[in-house]
Image (tube, rainbow, N blue to C red; front, side, top):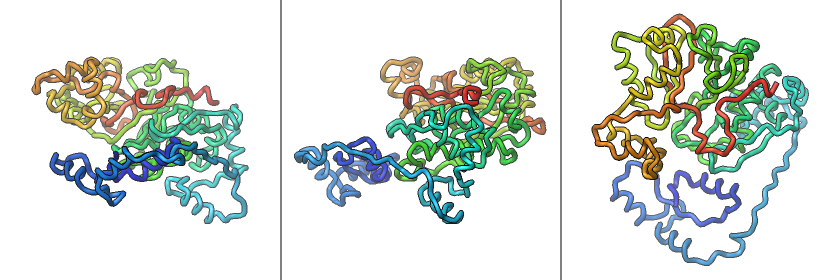
Length: 432
């Protein structure tokens, strides 16, 4: 039983999972925010997809015999031509748009010559399997090769020198075109020598459209995600309610290691400063501020207290703001993370009044998993921590024109909700 807004998605998921004729019934949308009386009206009314009483559809699905054709095996023909011949550039751009292979901006057409030139950027053979991607945990995993990643890198305008970073992102198992109704995007930080080799921007304008490497790596990550996971099509394989403008380029930047008062981010993930890595975060949006004032503690708490529990926070601070945090006692990024985990608290009634807490945390609490079980039994006005420590990240990015810092709603991806083997920080050196 599903809401009717998901009808095409349900058909698609059932088909790719080999049960296209599974029985289903639908109620109207929305379900969220409806009164008990309105929801009862859904059940007592018509199935909007079938055009018949909802309970009649349900009872027939439960009671009618299943015909043999409804349980036969399903086969897929995944063969495809590698090359398209004899079309003009305009016709090919239209073909890519019509098939959903682009982000609906013009692409560099991936000719055989361009793909071969791109493949010179890695020592790995074209037919080597890089990894698998899926739009959600409940969809099929699509496997892809180095050559297919190279095709998408060409489309994004990248060069061979960028390919190891793009391959590292592709190998993570994390899609930049995730299909969640809450419309998240992916954000990428690059650490280590590769950022300097590529001339990536970690300073003024690092999160904006002012650097070739930042732009093409982020765009390539998005394009390969939608094309190598089987698509990203609204109502079928993408269900973000509003969408997220950050998915256009998957904000990609280098950490400002030179001006940071703290050790580079990737060292907190077990790498050495000499390693080159990509770090991936899922983010929804951000809240912006300038500097630390006399009552900075109140400002930080107020900014972060409005974020949904479970989603986490990625603090992106300029070098000036980072030094200001050092001046008030945080000589390591870990000490700032510890302070946030301990001091950013909200009343239990507010904690459990968030969608994310009800959706992702409540089940753990009911199963006795701490500390969430204690939060569930706390008094309504008792203050409980908003974020577990592992849901807090700190990055140093930007120039020295302002003590700017931003709180991005999000964190490293929670592996519990994805296929085994996803990596949130990946070696670039392994893909040179």
